[in-house]
Amino acid sequence: MKRIYLDQVDSTQTYITELLPDNEPHEPVAVYTFNQLKGKGQANKKWISKPNAGIALSLAFPFPKSSEIDWVIVNKHICSNIIIYLREHLHPDFFLKWPNDIVIHDRKFGGMIMNVVSKENTQYLVLGLGLNLRQPPRLPLAIGLREILNKNQFDTLSFTSKLITFLKNTLEKKPSKKTSQQYTQLLWRLDESVEVQYVNKPQTESIHLPSHQKFIGVDHKGMALFHVKDHIIGSHSGTLSILLPPRKIH
Image (cartoon, rainbow, N blue to C red; front, side):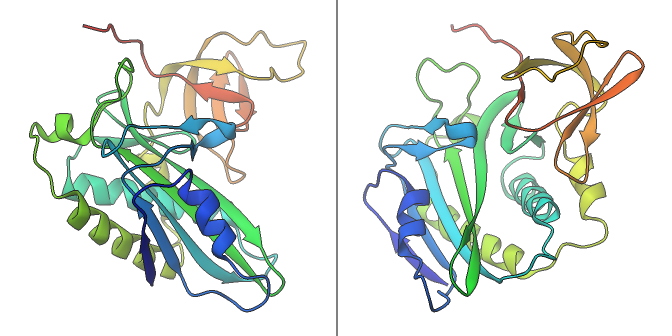
C-alpha cells in the first residue's frame, strides 16, 4: 500500500479522492496527517482540530465494479474491526455509536466516514478516520487519547502506521457470516433508552415520536431501529442523531 504523509491538508478525504485516476485501477493508498484544517464528517459536518491534536487518515481501496457488493455489510465489517482493534490496543471500553462515531465513557473519541467513488473501470471505498489525541477545547462531549491513557507521551507516528496496516488487512478480507452479530454486540447503548434528535421527522400521524427511545439495533439497510410504544421505527443516518449525555464544563 502506498502511504502519503502530509504536514497539513484541508481534508484527507478530498485529497485522496483527487488522486484516483479515471481509467486504470489505482493501488490501495493511505493519506494521513496530524494537522487537518477542514476535515469532513457525517452529514457534511466538519471535523476540525488544532495542529498535532488529532490523527486524520484516509484510505482508498479498489473494488471491482459489481452491483452484488453489499456496502452496508462492508461498513459493519470495517466499523466492527476498528472498535475491536482499539479495544485490544488502547482500552477495552470502546463502543460504536451509530452510525460511525467511536465513543468511550460516553464521550466521542473519533469518527469514521465511508464513501464509494466510482471510476470508469473501478470503484473505490474511501474510508476516512479521525481520532482525537487531545480533548478539543470547549467540547466536553469529546475525549482525547492522552486523557484515555492518562499519559502525555504517545508514539503517534508508530500507532498510525500500525493502524494503516491493520485497516489494509481488514479491507482485504471479506465480511464473515458473523459480521452483523459482531457489529450489534459493539453498539453503544444497545437495548437502552437513548435521547434522539431528528433532522427531518418521519411522516407519520399515528405515532408520537418522543425524544427518548429504546435503541434496539441496526437493520440490513443500515437503518437504526427504535422501539416506540408498540411500534418499531427505522431511521437513516441523515434523518436522526443519537445524542451523547450532556456533561458540564469544569
